[in-house]
Each structure stands twice: as C-alpha cells, then as structure tokens.
Length: 210
Image (tube, rainbow, N blue to C red; front, side, top):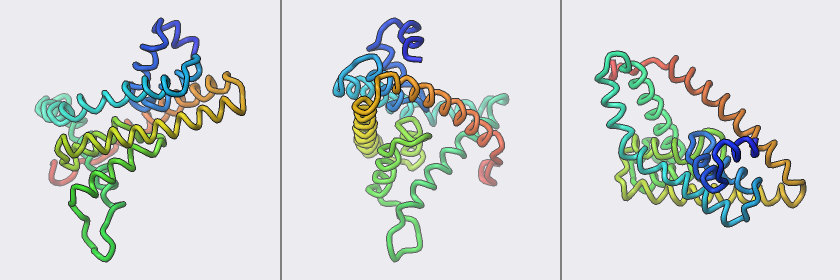
C-alpha cells in the first residue's frame, strides 16, 4: 500500500498531506504512511497535522451554504436534507454527553460545546476527526473563533496519540507492520463510508424538515 501511494503521487511529502486531507483516513492514515516511508516522529506529525487541520476551513465556511444550495435543487434535495439531519444528530449526541450534573436539561453553554467538539476530535477512533468534528461544530452553531480552537487542539492530541502508537509499533516490530496497518485503515474507511451512506439514505427526514 505504501509503495502504491508513493508511486501514484510521486512525492512522500505531498502524499502525506493529501492522505491526511482525505475523509476517514485523515490524520491517522497520514501519520502511519509518513512513518512507513521513513519520516521521523515530528515531521510525520507536522505534515499530517497541517494536512488534516486545513480541512477545517472549507468545511466550516462551505458546509451549510452547499447543503442549502443542494436543498434547492430537485435532484439533490432529499439527500441534502438527510445529510443535514445526520450531522444535526451527531451534534445532539455530542451534547448529550455533557449534561450539567443536577440539571435535567442540556446545557447550551459555549464552553461545553467546545469541550464536546474537542473530545470528539481528540479521540482517534473510526468516524472521529476534523471532518466530522467541524461539521458538529457547525451544527452546534459555534462561531468561528469558538470552533477553531477545540478542533485544532483536539486534532493535535489525536496526532500525538497516533504518533506515539506508530513509534511503539516501530520499536516492537519491523516497519512493514505499518503497511499492514495502512491496509487496515483503508479497508475500515471503505466499510465505514458504505455504512454511513446506507445510514444516511435510510434516515427519515424530521417533521420539521418535511
């Protein structure tokens, strides 16, 4: 997998940046690839962090306008509504994890929204990362200045965790193990993409959207 990507793009630096920009692969795949081709700890982390963090800006500023535009187009209206509902659901799930103790209602406090986004992005699990984390921030109605910090800091924490795990793998096994991990990440990304598309397709629009 590593050699295929290297030959396809022709530059290890650009391959790392591009991979870390791709949804579902993101920072995780970028770091694993970069360490697999020989970049050191800081270089791999830095390149992958820059590539994956850059995603924040187009998603934050363009996600809602694009969805609103697609909702006005007959052929794309239903899918745009379902995608919007999906991310609204993710935003609600994030806030449900941060209910003030002793209070039965959800808090709309900006700090708690920021904390929810930070934790979501910082934990390097499948379906977490800057892409979805930024979309959650958008549908939590966080202003740019309030959304950018938890996303970039959360992504840094995730990068440090993945970098440490990659270093541990290199200390225990040979560098070839990173290639197998990369195969696994791509396979998982494809499976999760299919699952997410099916989930969104089956989602029924809320009464409000209807």
